[in-house]
Image (cartoon, rainbow, N blue to C red; front, side):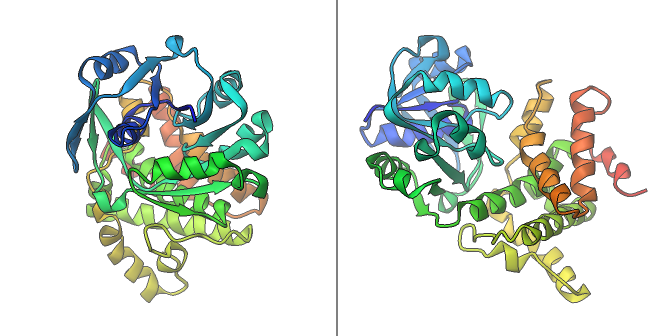
Length: 337
């Protein structure tokens, strides 16, 4: 099958490099011409928790003239409708899009290309571009996990699903989900708690855990999301073997203190990670706050569940986008009056 990664930035470059390392043909496509030129000239240079150099087939969006059977989608959710409509014109008959984006993008994508042709994948690791063509993996290799789901049984029975699974397994463990909304919500819990706060304070996940007040905020956002999931009868699925729904929920002061104490241990494999939203803000770009923390607020309002810490995080990030404030630990005063 003809396969591409569209939005081959940090995560897409790492995944593409692993697949190419296994002698598979895959196109890495990105708007960033400087990054693509570096990939063409020097290959994908992967550093950090793993280190290797791999020749890859890289294309700018303008150079994209093939049709594909499988497209892994890793762009930011800032213009998803137009992106997916464009990609639809580059799908072969019965071709699929596997979205590896944050939030809950499957509903929009399936409305454009059909539910049978829409797959979702949750990524359990992090990386960032440090120079064009050079990507630093910030999570340990044992976190290289993918949770893959199909929206319909027909989609799951397509050969495209098996091929999507096979290619992902070249980098790490693939878990086939029977409760993909639960898997998505588990990832939203992690992203909203730590990526949102990383964007507000300019901190890594490890630094959020180290600071007592920012760790408390992360805990409060987790609890808000757990309550929203309960209200919608969504069962949070384990991530990397940890049942977050049980571990981070609490109904008494003792369990609340225990949860607070274990957060740094739960995040230790990702302590070097900084949110891609933070990098966007530092580069004076719009970020994905509405697709991540914003989804929590939408689900919360449907069931009248209060999410004050999550909502304030969204507000502060929008103010940073608008130039009203900057990502700094000084923003703590907005949470603690």
